Amino acid sequence: MANSNQPEKDPRPGNLIRLGCIGSTLLALCIPIAITIGLKEPLLAIVLPLAVVAGFTIGLLVIWFTPLRKADTRELEAIKGQLAGLDQRLSNLEMIDSYERRRAERTPHGQGAPPSHGETLGNPAMAPDGRVMGSQEE
Image (tube, rainbow, N blue to C red):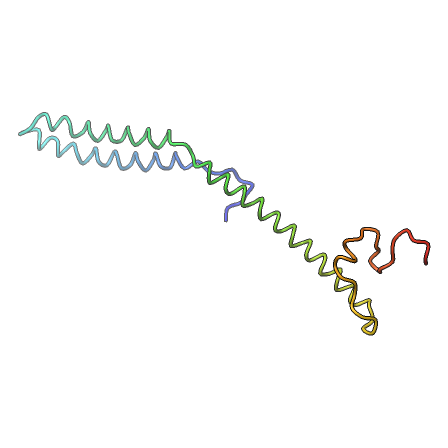
């Protein structure tokens, strides 16, 4: 996977180079054909290379002026945001799990089950050992 800090590379110059290679190859092939055809049909001999050049020009304009796919970039950013949110939720669950394990280790087995999730985490004034913070009992 590519590094997310690097800017996305513009594919248009590479596509233009490929189109240029194909266009010059077609032009190199059509000139001998046009000369051979020109002996019988001079109009076709002029139109054939012009058609290759016109096709190259249209392809160049289509490649250069077609907008980059920004929708994919927006979707990728949305997916990255969702992934960050899921990562945060996972770390919260790991924190809760480790808290519950420590709580279970501290609670002797004869005293019953440790307090439920709502009893310990739902009360912000409750200390990890089960005491109510700010109370006068010590």
